[in-house]
View 1 (cartoon, one colour):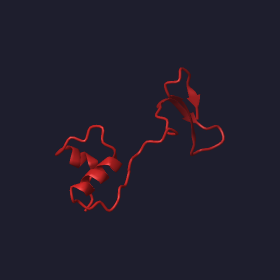
View 2 (cartoon, one colour):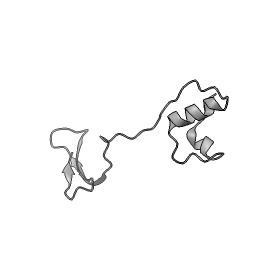
View 3 (tube, rainbow, N blue to C red):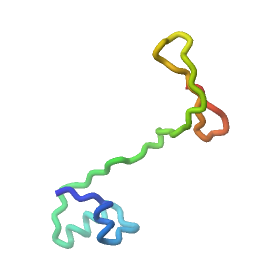
Length: 78
């Protein structure tokens, strides 16, 4: 059976507990833990930005040249 940490947190206090600690505690309580899967972890390489301008690419019909604001103080052209 798969159980999410979010679901488990609605039933018990998980503050400050890592998945590895929960594995140990659940195993100690007699619950078999087959594995831990971490999903949806954000990467430090992902940047969220707002598109400020989009114009047709001069050499391609299906592309746009955009200027985006990523909160760095100046717009980036992509």
